[in-house]
Length: 250
Image (cartoon, rainbow, N blue to C red):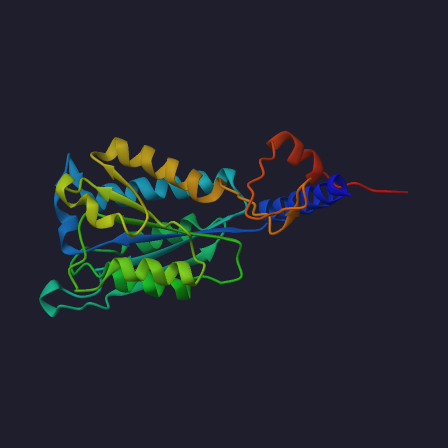
């Protein structure tokens, strides 16, 4: 009986995995377009490098990953810094597959100018997702800290409560080492020191944001009649692919 229960559970998990693999995976880029993004970074500004790198990545995903839907939220680009607009955040590209043209059009119009409302933008991001989606991830790209008196830690907790992402990703654009700890409460942080690193970091972050699947066992009866909960199960990819192949029974 014990092994029968395990088999049923394993089949259920594989079915869930197959369904998840076929469902759209949504990744929202939250891009900093505050005034500091006009600072030079090598031979170009941080904004120019971020735009170019992001467009290359979106184009690559469009050609190779049909089940990943991308969106773009930008902050700090609508109001001059003197206006102290701490709600300057807008969804510029809605989620869709094959939307590199929309990204290109939107990014071409963005000019850095305003504040850095990171917390407000993260909270607003919750409204950008359909909350029933299985895999939702946020990738925040910024060169600085919150300057609108918001609390990014509270914003990250809010996202977790909304099941947007257990662990948002933050990509820093040459942020000072002494400031990195401010991002610890938000999620996984990687600091790109130059444009070459930014390209590699973005690709790696996309892979992590869309390629991780975990299973959680609710109740399993062990051989000595004890209940085991939250037990991790590892399934090899070749076996999962085999189960994902449609099977017809006569």
